[in-house]
Amino acid sequence: DQQVKQNSPSLSVQEGRISILNCDYTNSMFDYFLWYKKYPAEGPTFLISISSIKDKNEDGRFTVFLNKSAKHLSLHIVPSQPGDSAVYFCAASATSGSRLTFGEGTQLTVNP
Amino acid sequence: GAVVSQHPSRVICKSGTSVKIECRSLDFQATTMFWYRQFPKQSLMLMATSNEGSKATYEQGVEKDKFLINHASLTLSTLTVTSAHPEDSSFYICSAFGHANTGELFFGEGSRLTVL
Image 1: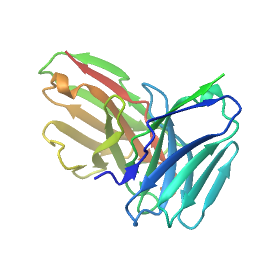
Image 2 (image 1 turned 120 degrees about the vertical axis):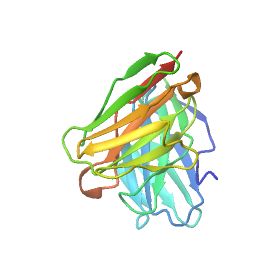
Image 3 (image 1 turned 180 degrees about the horizontal axis):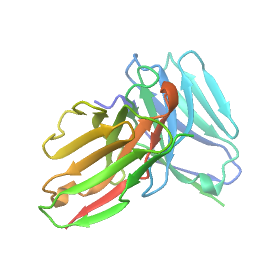
């Protein structure tokens, strides 16, 4: 039972354009959501998070949007840079600080 | 930010041997650490939750006798893959929550295990 799903295994965008990565979840108990970035042969690094009391959180080029009614969140990266090329995982938890459930990941490729 | 370090980053062993992977929280105390496994092009799969001073909690389908977890101190958790077989070859990653349950899970660099 995949409670967190990233339906797009890959995404390719041009440098300078916007990258939009999507994530859907099924567990209505999830109330904290995070995005991680991962390079090959490295551990994931935290990017940005959002709690269910918000619908938007912004940090520099990264913005996460949460639509609770649709159980959907998205990560926007603008402008995209070649160094952003990596696998992006969304994750969710029932409460902050509890175990995370990860999506399958989306490989983002930003072309120069 | 909080730093989690793993060692070794890469290990190659013969089938039937045991391999130990260490996970350390470098600038904070972690009463709970998590061990994940990632197969190529797949998501991170939680294997077990490592609790300092008590037994680890294993996810369904993960053999506790195969993957021994010891969390003897607030800064160190170890994963031992016992009697390793080629199908155990994978990327193992540990993690811990940063300060005061912020919800941000910090990951180690990962350990690539190859069993010949």
